Length: 83
Picture 1 (cartoon, rainbow, N blue to C red):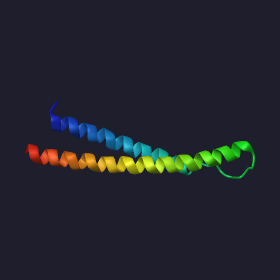
Picture 2: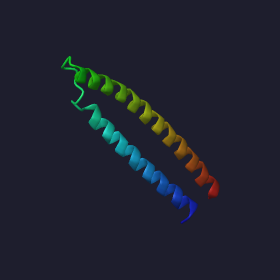
Picture 3: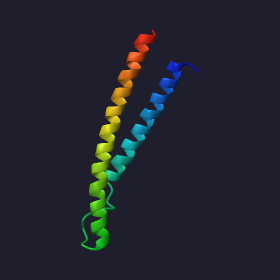
Picture 4: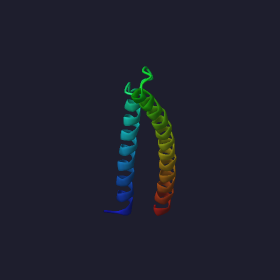
């Protein structure tokens, strides 16, 4: 397998995983498991968990998107130089 094919396959897999993570994030963001209805300990825990996990997920996806941009820039540069 050539280097370009390997890079293309790797990028394809990364894009698929990023899309999957985005889909999971969308489902969890709309989840009602952590609604702030009750005042019991479990409800407070899940409300705090949802808040923290949303912040973490947003940061993670932002970093992943930034990393994907860097990878694509590198691949474009590599492909231009190899041609």
